Image (cartoon, rainbow, N blue to C red; front, side):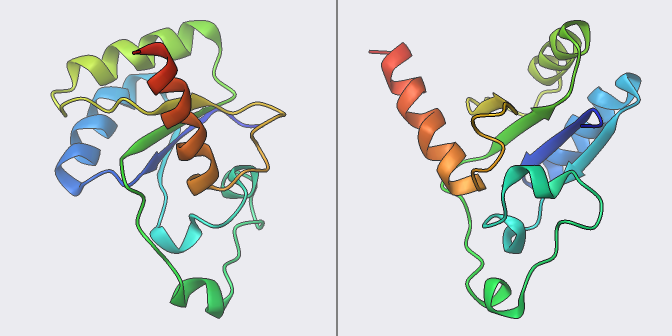
Length: 124
């Protein structure tokens, strides 16, 4: 998969700061629309696979929290991205994930729910 960063439920001011901070990576940064949240994550990065039916558009819903998903980044790119996000001045975005064979078929709601469970375990 081509290296990219997917932004979910990120406000306009936050996304502007994030995109500016991440530009030196020279990789695709995509703000995901709410009507795409029900699609598998892998479909959001593969050209031509992010088709949304009219019924999905009607049932579009927001996530409870912002989330960032990293796709195909090298270790160095991921390290740079995490530092850039921390320094961007967007405030905390605690839910971040790297796409894996295990989670690539999940939609945004499923991925966020798993991240919340993991986050709770780490902080308890």
